Structures are given as structure tokens and as C-alpha cells.
Amino acid sequence: MTTRILFLGGAGMIGSAAAREAVAQGAEVTIVTRTEPRRPVADGVRQLRGDVRDREQLAALVGGENWDSVVNWVGFTPGDLDGHVELFRDTTSQYVFISTCSVFARPVPTLPITESSPRRQPVFGYARDKVECELTLEDAYRSHDFPLTIVRPFHTYDRTTLPILSGWTAIERMRAGEGVVVHGDGTSLWTLMHSTDFARAFVPLLGNQHAVGESVNVVSGDILTWDQIHLTLAAAAGVRSPRLVHRSSESIATEIPGWGEVLEHDFRHTMLFDTTKLQRLVPGFAPRVSLSQGAREIIEHYEATPAAREPDAELSAAFDRLIARP
Ligand SMILES: NC(=O)c1ccc[n+]([C@@H]2O[C@H](COP(=O)([O-])OP(=O)(O)OC[C@H]3O[C@@H](n4cnc5c(N)ncnc54)[C@H](OP(=O)(O)O)[C@@H]3O)[C@@H](O)[C@H]2O)c1
Image 1 (cartoon, rainbow, N blue to C red):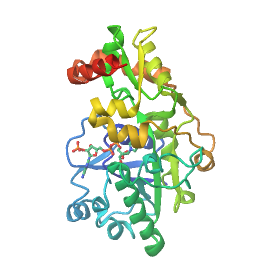
Image 2: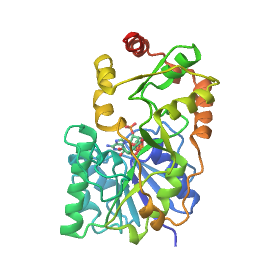
Image 3: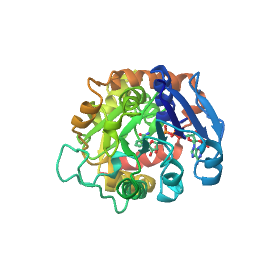
Image 4: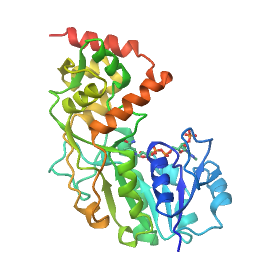
């Protein structure tokens, strides 16, 4: 029997890869987005238009149908989930909330991180609100038998996204022989996952009753230092020996205040994951796209897309000031 899947959102970077993979695996996929998706939507995906945070609109669009799995890609605050428990309690066998591994406490008390690591992010707004969403839905699972699965991606990228805060500016500076600032001493560990690998790990969780009541960190085993990430991107851009300049996260935040929160509460901490639960639920899953391969795709995409290569003169000037500091 065909699996019927509803995506709330699901036309962005991760969602569109997941929709393509689900269709390829034979599922019937419907996505609800409020605007025309900017990315190509996989052939065979049924599209509905509406705001998934408007409970009346959502009920009118999808309320009369039954689903094996409903995936909410666009829940960022508990308010975004209003009405979902009532609407989907009796019409789906699984409601998947897309959270984030940013919910885990920093510094991480014990590495590697597992699904039972403490969730605590009192300051970093994005992560704090995702924790609140998880707790709200867990309460519905316990009190109302709501068939919840929490899925937490970590840092996921595709060809359209350079997985560093400095984006294309870093590539231009490397190519020009100018320094690129890397936080800390460039040796803290990070985990990146290509969106197609995420999709291959994620889709088998849909309609999987063993995943109901569980939270699953969907992460790759591709562990890299921040220097390695920069060096791999440099190599793909044809730069053999880029000048990486290390500055503390605190110093960087004085020149680039917008980066302060994400560096302090996310990027500067080593993030290593134990993927045992994912392996148990999706036997045999292994990522296929290394960062070296992903980086080549990214550079090719940016070379072919002039609009993506907007220079950021302010960021470049901030890097110059940071590099000039002793
Ligand atoms: N990328 C990462 O590294 C990462 C890491 C951890 C967690 N995540 C989580 O992954 C999820 C994002 O996935 P994604 O990037 O693939 O995006 P996505 O879920 O595919 O969502 C983006 C799409 O949903 C639409 N949308 C947004 N709000 C909507 C609403 N209220 N009603 C209907 N449609 C709406 C957007 O349209 P508009 O253009 O109109 O906004 C866009 O088409 C988020 O929950 C994020 O926290 C991502």
C-alpha cells in the first residue's frame, strides 16, 4: 500500500530533498506552502497553497484526509503549532516535528551527544523556542496519545548554501590571498550533512511505528574541524593554501555582533554525535556525500549563479579589522 505523507512547509533546502526521496521510495507526498516554492518541486508531489500556522486555513485544506505521516518543517515557536494536535490526532498515525540538535545544552556535559543529552538553551532564541515546541508536543504525546516523533537535523547543507557564516565572502577573500577569520583555534569539532544524505536517513522514519514516541538525531558521521571545513571549501575553489586567521568567538562578536549568539551558544562548541538510535531505526544508513564532494557542488553552483555571489563589504572590513588586531 502507498504511504501517504503530508509536509507542512517542505519546499526549502532540507524539505525539498526529503520530498524527492520520499517520492523516489514510492510514497504519495503532499506539501503545503504559503507561496510558490523557490526550489524545484519533485515530479509527482501534490502541492497545496496555504499558511500552516493558520489553523482554519489548514483544517480547510487537509482536515478531511488521512495520513500515514504528517511532517511539520516550519514550527519555530509553540504558537506555530496551535491547533495541530486537535487537527491531526485522529487523522495521522505519526506527526513528525522537525526540531534541531541546537536544543542540546552548551557546553555539552558529556560527549558524544545522544537523544537523551540534556536540552537546555536559555539564551539562544531559535534553540530555546525549539525546546519549548518539543516540550509542548511531548506533553500532547503523554496526555493525548498524540503520535509524535521528534527529528533533529544538525547542520545540513546543499549546493546553494556554504556551511560557514562568512559565505561567499570567505571564498572571494581566499582567492584574493586575503585572510579569513575562523573562530577559536579552528580545532573544535563539527558535523555537517548533505541534504540528500539527510533525506535518505529521514524518509525511512516516516510511517515507521517504531519511531513514534521517540526523538531521533538525524546526523552524519562526517566529523570535521572548522579549519578542515574552510580548507575543504578552499580546495574546491582552487585555493591551495588559504590564510586562516584564528580569533576568539568573543573578539569576533565585537566586530560582527550578529554572529555573537550563534558562536557563543552553538558553533564554538564541539558537537559529536552517537548515531546508535538512527542506525537502529534505519539499518545500514551511511552518508554518501563527503564535504569534499559537497564543496565542489557548492562552488560550481555559485560560479553559475551570479546573484548568489553578492559581495559583503561590511563583513570583509570587519575581517580586516579583526586580522589587524594583535
Ligand atoms: N538547515 C539546517 O542546517 C537545519 C538544521 C537544524 C534544523 N533545521 C530545521 O529544518 C527546518 C527547515 O527545513 P527547510 O530549510 O528544508 O525548509 P522547509 O521546511 O522546506 O520550509 C520552507 C518552505 O516552507 C514554506 N513556509 C514557511 N512558513 C510557512 C507557513 N507558515 N505556511 C506554509 N508554508 C510555509 C516556505 O515558504 P516561504 O518562502 O513563503 O517562507 C518554504 O517554501 C526548520 O524547522 C529548521 O529549524 C534546519
